[in-house]
Length: 377
Image (cartoon, rainbow, N blue to C red):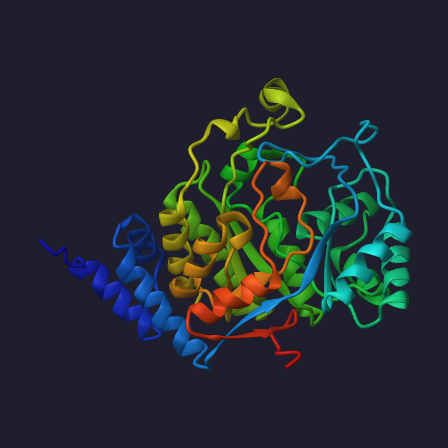
């Protein structure tokens, strides 16, 4: 017996394909549905309407974690270390230079510069670092400092967000990554983290940056303690801000990666210092849920132009399939990745493999920059 897409799901999908805005209840209904092929086909149709050109894109950058010191405690993070921990580090400029030189040699035009919420580094350290990097590599875009980091600078200095961002922009900051979004619902954020910006603050950082003329990406880490309604609330808040500012260039989602190695702080620290959620015990959302959620995001986020595949968490095959479930970009070559790798999830693709994934999906691969402008041949 051949199953048929339920009429109510078909109606919602037809509405999205036609370019009409979905309601939050319709988004939840899609997430509750198990009709992956129909949802994926609708997302693919929307992607082809938004990006009819016979290409799919990728970029070449390097994720440089300038420090692993962090004053926040996140149940899902095996990467961070507290100040004065034996394994804590702050990279010197010479090391940053070497990493960027390697990136440029591979054809990269950007670095993703992120760290933790360091309790001791002054704002001047970040300004000096940015100036030094831009002086040495003026052609390289610094996609730097996630909204939680920016908000941390604001709290530490007691300066307005506008002032912090203006100073960083003047020093060489080019664009903001979307890290630290997780789920933009305070119930969820309070359960899985302590000492980290809540939902309004994350959005405010992007709002201020966008109003200064800057661009940023948006993200979602799902498949942990959130409900389906809260996933849609997250997408709704991104869509509302994009209506206001038009500053998000892309959306990237990935599933929570349960640590395959024990977080350094151990279960007692999780129970004692955060919401008591042992996220290593949570069942992982699989490829089905990843592809469905990404496809629903493509249908729901009608004002965010690009959706990026997350092969770094899903692997080559699912990362490629994401191009048929709403993504128009394969993401970065990711010359270096430390945070997800620290949890024991390590996927690595060469540039040739990324290009082959795009070609085998029926498209021509093209390199792009942070604004999704094509570069190179």
